[in-house]
Image (cartoon, rainbow, N blue to C red):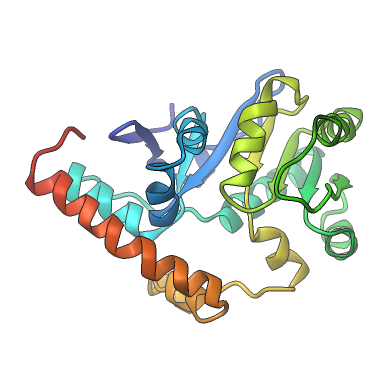
Length: 244
């Protein structure tokens, strides 16, 4: 049984990534949490529900790793969206599974298709680019679910940025025919190489967040906003003995 650490309402995954598997006839929702999403969820009730209701909630950030250590004395490892994506693809290659990518532009998906079909010969791939809009209509949702279910993937990767992707899965999970549903955001761009993930040595130094902040002003603003609030939250929970 995979181990988790409970911090407030969140059950954060605390086991090795290799403990994860794909089980037939069982639906598993995988999401990630980091300092920014923790702060955003404080004021977005549906996003919070989506994260809290996750079957597996991965610690995708050094802030969450720090929180587990300071508040619970637990030493956990960061598992990024890119890490779970690569792990599930390797597992799918060994077992001959089916993987579906939902999100991004058609151009990005075409690049992903070309790269992944060459690298993973034993995996069947499906793809769908949803309309680019802030809110999907009922018809949009029905079309997206229909495309997924026609393919019947073992693994569904959803890449529509947080919190949109998590809330979409939360709203539609009962209708989706897939074993693992995994929201991985920017990973689609990493695969297509329209954006670069940090080099491994930067990741090893636990500075991936800093590398990403230099790649886009949007991310810089995000870190400047959420990081101080998150550290303040950890301080209050530890020293003012709020319920954790």
